[in-house]
Image (cartoon, rainbow, N blue to C red; front, side):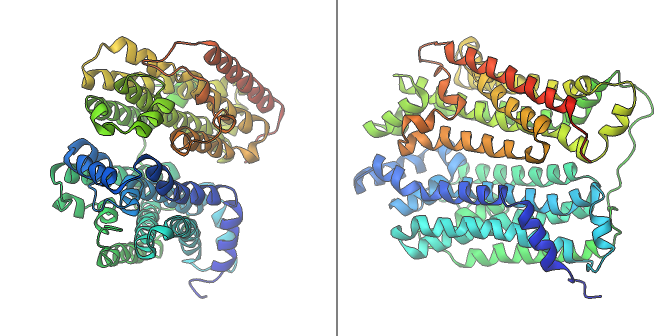
Length: 522
């Protein structure tokens, strides 16, 4: 049989299953970059203002670590600097999610075995997954070109290929991880760890070298995106490095896939220690989610330390640019620029905490669809008690993450920890509301459970990009974060948080009621 037999059918199946999430990933990634010229052009509307911004950002090591160096002071160059790295990260996340979902997750749930028993070649499932990832990244790249073509087609193509190519680099890393591990969760974790290492290498290299030529950045695929220098010389040869990485990793993944059985892996899972015991459903859920919580917690603490250090120079970053001050005021609410910056960062951590909360809730959905929940519920264990065990890490864990981010901000900024901890925890009602949406979808409409990611992504886009685009207030109010007090610095109005907390409780209760009444999905 042809090793690629059935690839077309499996690709269509993968695209059909991702018909909602794939366009959303492409739209968010490409739209993020496409919004750049409009938002930056409104803020820095003269060549002198853009040149001053480029010079100040290049001289600031913290900003270089976060965004990378500025290689051109045109609108296209500033857009590539401001949004290029983060668009590449989004493309990488989309690639790893799509590939792991259609490879290792299919094997882990047992769905791949009956498919492989038909007229399906050995390389067809992996090829279909990579083609689905390619479709997502191609869509994002086309949106980048469409949004930046007015600033110069060559630079738009260079940035689009760099972003889409980086997404495929990590899609092929995910393909390798899917061959090595037995679980989809571990495959995603390994790929996410590689992405985090790539960002850390790029940040360390760019922080120490204003010209962006540090050897550390050449070790990072995210550094390759910066080295393309879209609108700043357009280094097309760097794209060959990205293409070579994709081809090499694809060939390695094919080689590994040909040497293992369906469901098997090269890194066999080891049993845990024979000592110790689990005291109940909650202890089991916490054990399953403790690794993710530890990873997120470390990231939130380190992120707080980084942003707290940047807060000291917040006023200098915008200088006398009144439009930039207006945007920070809309995002942060405070009249003082430092308070507005801190409030903006607190809000960002709140939006990211929602991603953790949604993922923790949907872990219970994964336990159900994989069939691991059914043996537990066949014992004297009620559904609500089992579900509560998984919801506790979601709701309490998000509070812990926000507390760690507030602590990091306070330690790095040198401010009393109380106000920043309070400001961080004030984000909880919005986080819990989105977690409640995830519980509702999982409990009442389990087939649409993954749409909770779309709700969280929409709120992230509205909160982070909406104020820069000066979207109408009615649109911004669709996000629960729009109804929170802007702390520190803003007035402490608690009507919105109380309403959101009540809404989160209602959504969670409705989801649990739906779970109690419906059949389990396998």
